[in-house]
Length: 135
Image 1 (cartoon, one colour):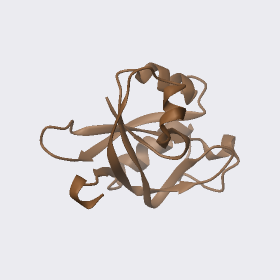
Image 2: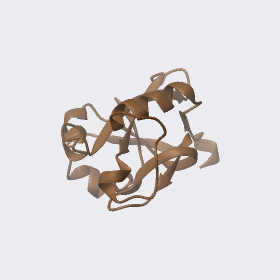
Image 3: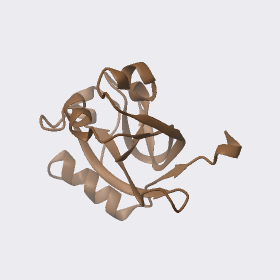
Image 4: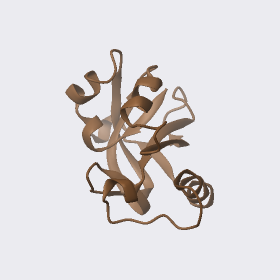
């Protein structure tokens, strides 16, 4: 699975602590969500975020690291703009700013995961892989 990573997981040593098998595909940009610093980095509606595209089959290990079951982060899928031999989507983790002491809000009411899904469904959020000749 391809995953857009930002913050801590852009560093190979950090990923190696979480997953045994992975490869960085290349630099990427997430459009439609901006980086917000908190206790851990997260995302908020608007802007764009620089990061990397990570490929791994160990999505369960990443989910555990991001505490998806505990609700600290949610994992969602967004379109991936990349060459034809790549998957059409990439996963992205979004942390709950209220739990991360981050200065950001997600519009709407209800559980955080529902608000993230609603924004992703309403806005043009996507990952764009940076072409190798532009790196």
